Length: 264
Length: 362
Image (cartoon, rainbow over all chains, first blue to last red; front, side, top):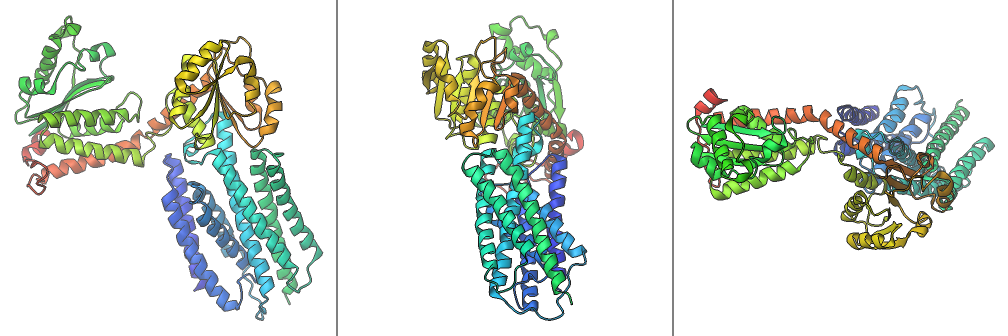
């Protein structure tokens, strides 16, 4: 039942992607309403899945790599729902849907939904740490998407080759403002995530701690450079992509390592 | 009832011929002389068209003669002979409906997708309605045309982008900065194109505008005209630390702005883009300036190129617009054949259902 909900959710995101591609090919790019509706519907099914799974495992559903990916996809959709319309980033849905589809599609296809043989005891600090960190990744993902949009817009302006998509992307300064806010949101949430990790009462592998702090330092450096006007907006946008790639790798690494260590 | 359109446009006649008809003939004259039940004259700089509805067929020659006679009454067209008049086109029934929908949607315009023609069509309709020249047939056809035009504009990209150099510059500024109300603009050189571009920016909300020119008097004149402040010419380079948009059109033989003199000023404003519109020939800004981070340089050729890209983009949308139009034409023709003339809408005059319209005209 719960996987069916997830499949329906994935179909919603797929519909958003297909719609965007069709509109882009036709040169008529007005995906805002449809995409927001499709992503919103996908989000509702994701929430339903996570709720059922949470009841099933008796805690926040972040017990294996599969659940982590779904929770991440849910976080990305959540932040898009909060940020996209508020900042009038009309085309963000067209960029968000493929990322969510990719993460969720991979989670569904890959054999990573390995249930723990015994029920994992609830640990509020651990759940808070895992969930807040994943939502922070969602914010970093959206910053990465806004970064891609910024680079696409910037490239067209520089080369004087303006395609249909140019007229639907938000102005450069609006995009940069959105990137900055998303980075701050992600950074604050991630900081809470890291700090709460030390209260879980569980031994923390040194590699994971070092890697998490490295990602935190990377984002701190981006924000500091941006704040002190040392890094140009274009480079901030590019670093958002690098940062999210690093964060995603770390997330995968942590979850994979944790899963391996819990295997009998 | 026979619906028809007789006219001349930029497709079939040059401006000299068109201006001999535009603005001289009146709808009433057409009605009176050609015997139409209903008639409407649409005269714009690119077309002169008579839309009519009549019980019996009114020949193109009759309409032409009517327009001619009216024209010949004025001295401006006194030397135009009937034999010199280029062939007027004529559309009847569904073709006439389709043509009007295309015209109102901007598909038939010289600059594809321009929206001015819709306003002109609305004015022509209002005038004919007020004078009683437009009756139930034209009323329905024109109301539908306005709906179609709106739908085409909403559901296609046919009005997307700008197609003139001035509007391209303003459009790009909005793509970079969003709202222009907080933008600081420096106009370097008090030429006519600079003035036009500056005015366009002011009309979009720019309030901080500075003008610099070798002749400070001309700078003051232009500043007064566009509501800005004059800056002495030797002070303009320092302004680049503050401004967001630079419009330059001086007659300098060598570039005034190079990467070497601009780069140091950009260090203080790394987080703010600088949009440079160089409309001078020879250019005032070295092309290499575009390579600097956060600087977007557009010269006259690149602005022209963007305008052409927009036009090409609009042309690509013609098929989508035509599909919408075809759907409406079919529906409109169908509504006539189904006899929507029954006085179901008292506010509108009955649309007399004449099956012969479909059979003989459509």
